[in-house]
Image (cartoon, rainbow, N blue to C red; front, side, top):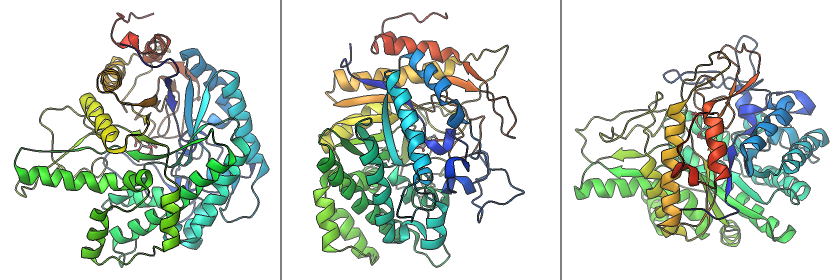
Length: 484
Ligand code: BG6
């Protein structure tokens, strides 16, 4: 079993979760900069601006801004062929509504991408990864406002213009579908800069924001095609496959209904139109949305060329109201139930490697376009002992998922561009703001209270992943991976 020779093995990060330097080089305040730290059980707080008595873990993060050469050297040692990260919107347009970009911010990403390329690592870039300028949130209500189409496209066109010779694969909005989980307000805030008010019909607000994002995303696809036909623009969604709890047709229909709620976000961006199921739903709900014919023309014109997605867990649903819900806001939403066949991580995320194969096949059959697994990994407690981190649980997790991914490609015929391990160097957790929910193949000495030397250490999984890449995936099947 082997993968295409140019398969993009690598890792994934997001600017706000690693860069730190939150005020350097003229950077403005972003949504991530006003979020405090939480835990699995205590949600992160979104504060009104930065408050002096609060701790904001993203302000320093792991200081990738100053350590990127050292970190990229480590990624190169593992043999990464690509690194997915994001461009912090606020480094380029600090407030978001300026006419001219900030040259210092642009120059930083030139240095970063040039360094990656010099090490044979292709940058894969997300334009908006929970990093909306806070000024746009305060002044315009985030993506509630149509004005954000202009602000975002100005940012996106600036980046495409500047970096199109260095970056081929781009994604517009990270996990754009998360915001439909309206019970947890963190998602509407991080996806779209929306702070719900009691008067809001949350779902309607989110569909409106998503519509403006679809239009802006389509304009980006169109611009990129005219600028440089080699560019590939994708959408990016969080995989949320919902299984029925039983073969009771009511459960099957409930799972299908929930899945469509998620697929909606990629359906529109891949197909270029609003499917009838959502139009009818909006009508039934009496949602009044600002959608013009011109918008629809854009959406039809700017269909994405690939689908990028993150994959962490699967969900289970039932129509039976008497079955207890897990009510886990941190993962799949409030209406899901436990899966008796699966174990979960320490943060309650079910571990389901076969679900990855299932989801890849589902997407392939639905869209018939290239797919890209741009996030997958295990958030776990790691212990640094005598400069070593032994993380067999992470190796087991990655191994099982990579095996299922390879089956999907080699047996099921899925067209897959690449696979990037999420948080390849320990980042700040998005949902909890913790450091101790670690994903990396590289450990960073940074703690939840902000202490730590920021020194980097290779974990056991580092060498394991190096062998996987060097063997183009064969190592997960054939080799007895010895400690070395
Ligand atoms: C995805 C995000 O939701 O999952 C990342 O795109 C995030 O930003 C990752 O970090 C893992 O989530 P968490 O909360 O464990 O960091």
